[in-house]
Structure formats: structure tokens, C-alpha cells
Length: 156
Image (cartoon, rainbow, N blue to C red; front, side, top):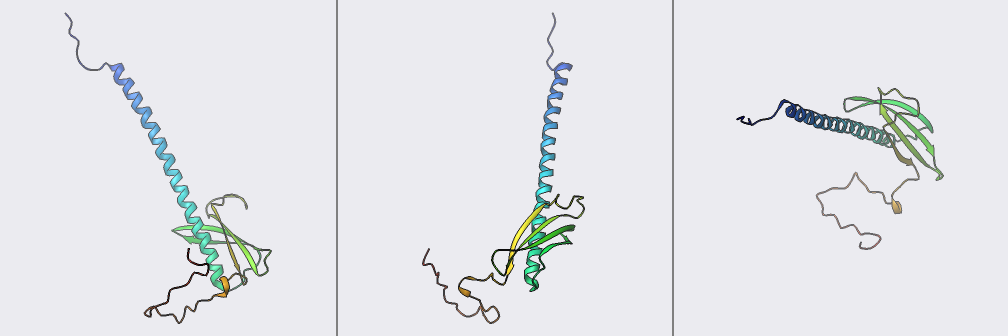
């Protein structure tokens, strides 16, 4: 009389290992794809910040930027970035649109390719606050009680 032994045959073990290996390969592929996406999104976010910084620097400089294209490089977050700003006059006199495109400096691309982010801003002497309101930032003290600001459109 022959007794059946408990356990798995070699074929069953090999099939199980093959199934586990295929599953692990799929998981590793998904993790690799997620890591690449995360890296791209990080670079895209940093490129947007570089573009926003460039627009802020133009606004704070107090000088009217020349119309046309200007290229430059800047360092941000431990990396070198290449930016291109395009200043275009708008239909409104005294208002200019500033488009800043940014890509990593090490990306080898043509003039119109490889930009990670493009941000637009407005600058000019026709841009102001509604109703000509200009706060006096230099003389305001925060120790005094300030009256509540009325909403000009009524309560909303």
C-alpha cells in the first residue's frame, strides 16, 4: 500500500514561483512609472515657480521691460533653469502681457520645444486697483483698532 505524502510537487512550486514573479514584475513596473511621473511633476512645479519669480522680478524692477523675446538662466532648488520671456503689447494702451516659459537648462531642445511650464502675467501703468484705491503701506500701524472695510457691492 502506498501512502500519499503531503506537500507540493516540483512542478507546482515552479508554477507558483512563475506566477509570483510575473506579479512582482507588474508591481515594479507600476512603481517605476509612478516614480517617473512624480519626478516630472516636481520639475514642472519648480519650472512654474521659476516663471512666477521672473514675472515678479519684472514687476518689482520698476522698469518697463522691452517688447520681444529675452532669454536667461537662473538657479532654483539646486538646479539650473533656462527661461524665455516674451513681452507683448496688448490692445489696452499701457498694458503688456508677459509670457515666461521655463525648462531645465540641461534639456537639449529646439527653440520652441521642451518647455516644462509657461506662465503669463500682466504689467503696465494701466493696471491698478479698482476705484483708484491706493493703500498707504508706510504709515499704517497695526496696534490701532482698524475700522471694518465695507464691501462696495453690498453684503455677500
